[in-house]
Length: 131
Image (cartoon, rainbow, N blue to C red; front, side, top):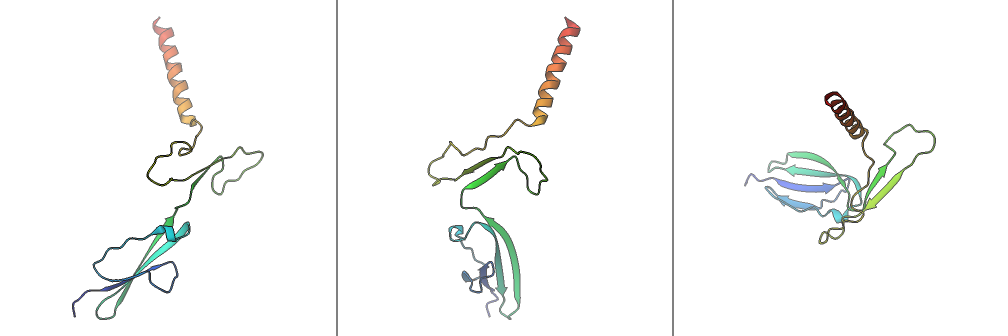
């Protein structure tokens, strides 16, 4: 016996492995064949004596366009009229950078306004006191 383990790689609950190799090994997982969403990589290793080890690795595939929703958070309790902005953009073909639509415009955070108002107030106070 050579002491090497045989490794079986499964995706989600598929009973047929996508790869069957001797360890140590490396492989490339093509996510283009998977639908967007949550998946589980299941790695089963069987040693020369027949004992099995299992490792589950959850991951999320996002090959499609990225969707950003501004103005509504997950599980939010809301009322009235909500202004909601939706932006969806793709990564393109990875050969050219698409600048238009690749960033989601956001409002200025309230802490920035507080910082600006505080600085302007301090500057006015300083000018009045020392002039």
